[in-house]
Image (tube, rainbow, N blue to C red; front, side, top):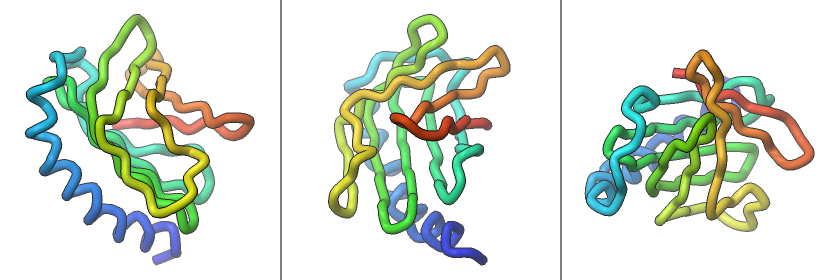
Length: 128
């Protein structure tokens, strides 16, 4: 098992804690597009592990592991056209975090994948 997989596994425990807390958060979110609800994993960015869970009730859970950087977030999401917007109400990280967001937009592809463009860098695709 390589280092990325080990980091992703350790971060998974943090994600599960966030997932459990998201049920309380869902009461504050508006229902979202149920066709996009599901569990997604990111592909296409070397040495990055990231997962996203979109609930039909409008809540989301997110994690990202990159080297020594770990992020875990939860909040509300909505779709307008071909854009999914994530707005976290809770965001945890383990230090200085240049990737931290207070609003993140993902492009919806015709195949139902979600595309994340990193500033000046690679593009990752979340797939179910």
